[in-house]
Length: 547
Image (cartoon, rainbow, N blue to C red):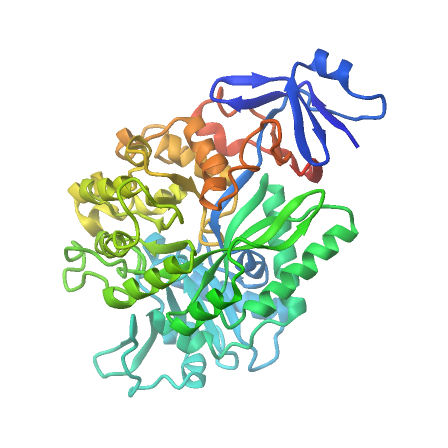
């Protein structure tokens, strides 16, 4: 059926708008004025009155963890807790509410000691988590996901005792008597997580269903998602296909997903990916709506996080000079992984936050790219602590940056203390990244941050808390304009996933993936962008969310 959207403020390019567009077979056929296009469409066309709403290309979040977005809805929510005592209270309330049987693992996420406003401002220890329950193994993650806090039972079941060995690319923290404190960082997290029973096919489907519904409600029609670690490839793909088939049976598109596939530092998993020979091949598609699932990239970790002091730095942390953080893998193995993936024609995306971590990744990428040429679109996820030399090297090789402006909401409070004012001034450098021609896309890394794109756009534009009108923008020279932020969330994110020929723009031939907003984010005060509501989300011309 032909459809027409009219009476809208439809953004085609920067400062270029139209009133109406026509959709046929899921794609945009034509754009123009309301009067002209209403006169052109056939009598049976479906007519959608935008009622003055701002219509944009639907958002594409370039890096999230969709399965975990859904999974968090059934976990202990620790986000916003202002003390150790509040985290304990939330854990107890969760157990009281759901009454899980003894022995069932309890998981939670969002703990951020940097934001505690009462009591001790520190990592939780086993004695703290034991106060929640001694009958359930408990694993709570720091808001970054790279540090976990466990109770004694979780440690016991994982066999973590005084004799626990060092972990390559991770730490099991111990007190002065050699007793594990319950704090695990980076690769050591796997010691406890591997004991948690894998979710069933039905549970995975429910997590994906919940995540997709939330994404649609925020105007997102596509994403890059890290849900796979290799050994679970077939089971996760099976769950995705089930969900897509369910949606199709309802005659409704789901969420387009570009899989970012981890390898858990195991070369044999990378070998398996390459043997499958399915890179960028559709794993689920519909003849009307296009591709919805494909294997997009290999995902690796180079270091940890700024908040946990595990991001790998060139110089010691200013507030913890005994450490520079640490690499998750050494240069030789990193080079090996990237060279093998590149030889197989696969894109590589690497988590790197610290300047030493970014440097190591660039050293590896420089061995498989050339000046001005990065055909596989290798990239760096987060890319936070940067200097001019690092950004210049990224620009010269067109290395992608997949960044999260909303991270600044929390990190600006600790950045200068962690790395010093000079390095802080060249970090989270979104305007510089854009100006230097580095291909940049935006993401939230949800559920590390909320999935809503609008606060993320606001932070890119404003670089300060919108509620604190008297505060200055954090290094204001690195602010970007609204259209640049939007482009990083649409066309540029489509580019990062090799989808730029059919997603991310409102133009003839592109899929009608659209979002309707109740405010014109180009005209309102920047501090009000986060107040904007999504009125409707469309995917391939079908409404998948409506307020």
